[in-house]
Image (cartoon, rainbow, N blue to C red; front, top):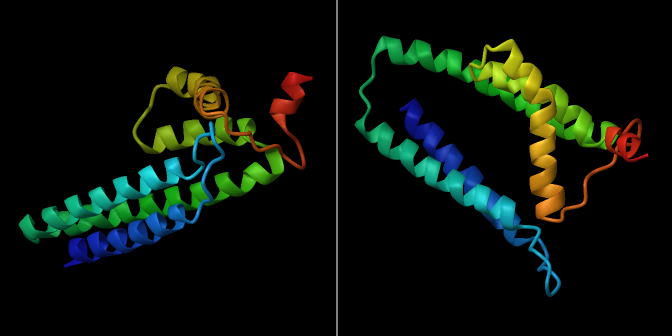
Length: 155
């Protein structure tokens, strides 16, 4: 029953997100539509909710599944709190510094235990994301009110 509820909640959230993505104004001629990434993510979430519902219809209930689900719930809530803090920190510290701090934390949560890999992620993740979003897609990087590492690096 819980798997059905999770699938339905995710489907509702993704439908609301699709509607929200459609509310983004159209792009000027020659520009990329700003809603393309939220729309694609919302459609992907809708697909995942479908997979959850299909999996729920095939799942049998046992004690091991329930206890594993409780641990996963704590991790999901922790990841959600990290995402909220990460998003809010953009306003204060721009993009690079929060990404450099959050990347190794999230990678550690997902099972990366190599200290060298985590240390490299402090530099590689902000660099790769900066190249994808701000260089290739042409999105303007958010600058921080308190301190912005990007403006400090650029001089």
